[in-house]
Length: 213
Image 1 (cartoon, rainbow, N blue to C red):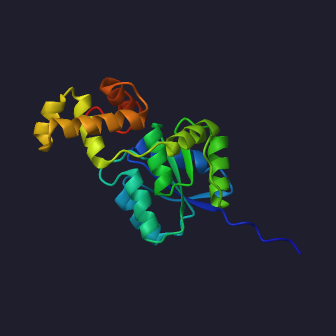
Image 2 (cartoon, one colour; image 1 turned 30 degrees about the vertical axis):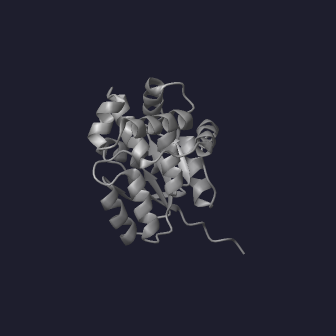
């Protein structure tokens, strides 16, 4: 007796750029074992769409206005939906990768990924496994070994990146110069850098802070 044909994997595409959504829909729509159940331009719309459809895999951009990609992952998990999530983004700072996987993403791909690899990732994640390219996985492992910075240390890092002195930072935060100095020393130790300038540069490169903050 022949086996019934396998159901196609149902995919939701989430990206705030209509050209990207249309391109992915067109590209993945050519695959007989994949079915595009919808697309969404925001995290809020994505969560609502998953609630109305039987989505197996979500292809999710990280940088979107309103609800961010990470917040969208957290909301999908909080709502109890079983859809598995692959982050598909143009960005790959260590912190982007770490936050997405920590939030619950099962895959991480860059937007210049080939169709063949994207389909492989979708099938792998749908089967209950993770799909993270080797170079990104190595950076994720390295990031996970680092000690997390506190919210106060991140606040001070942003001020360091703007060139503020310990005295100026202390004045803004209402703490003593000595307390600021202790925080800066802790930041330098955690980031494994030699000075405050390198700390700010490294933090920007890793995506811990952004230049426009």
